[in-house]
Image 1 (cartoon, rainbow, N blue to C red):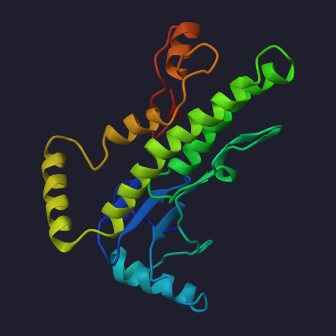
Image 2 (tube, rainbow, N blue to C red; image 1 turned 60 degrees about the horizontal axis):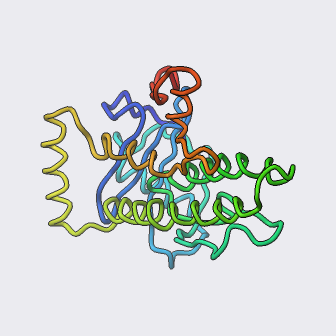
Length: 233
């Protein structure tokens, strides 16, 4: 959707609404002002009328009752926490959403899938060429399942709970914590989200290095740093 959040003083990159009725994750997708608004509703509601309910949500939650909001695309979906028992069976290898599914509140489904691909491509070539033992593929399966089960899924579940399912007392306490954090230049997840994102990576199954360590070894540079205005540097 397109809406000028910045004109109303909202954060230019991402916003969380912590509320058990109107909770939402609002993230900027493009530089021209396209955003994704993820909110929840009763799963028993029919698909008919969904578009009207979206605009009703905008009227209740967005500044100026959502006046001027442009809905570009909408897609209902059910949230799951699932993981296959094995990501490798014989010559079949799985990665990303084919191997595991999590709710989108932390963005760890996409990020975890990228790290799956990184880990798999590193070992698949050498194994296919006969330069490495096939057991590396089993190591890939075990390592990436562990990351999903120990990091991606539990953190995503907790983020979902904190966004959509807190009690009124918990919401009040959370807001007090955020007010205090803002005094010190911190927001919800500042530092911790980056920390957990790093935990989604599996160190090289060949040399044991993380991508940051590899970058340092090859180029003498530390980990990439994200700049909202210019990308990674």
